[in-house]
Length: 125
Image: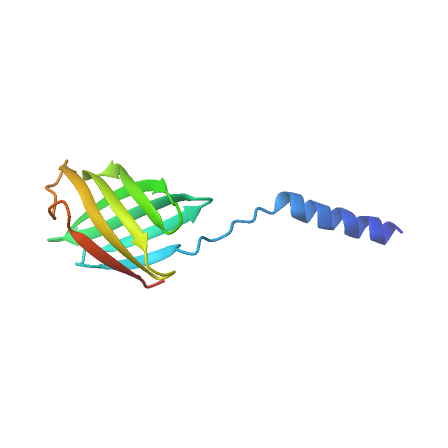
């Protein structure tokens, strides 16, 4: 009986102290076309965070954005980075997306693309 109680305690303790995080189906690292660097994407219960990094003339530039996933689409609003952007993203599969730059307001750097530019992305990891 003592072994059974110890086993039950161990199982309950394991469940109470072990955090489980489900991966979103779109989570991953994507490369883009045109090449704007890598997009690191993480989704958790409908909230999406994306960090985009790119190297231009040996200068690392980056931007972080977030939005709410509705079905297979998300509108990303920049949180911090070199520019203030709004981007619409539609996942065309679990490993690909299309994105359109809705707006970009220059900050520390000039905007690289005009508003309306469309990008595609492919998951590489």
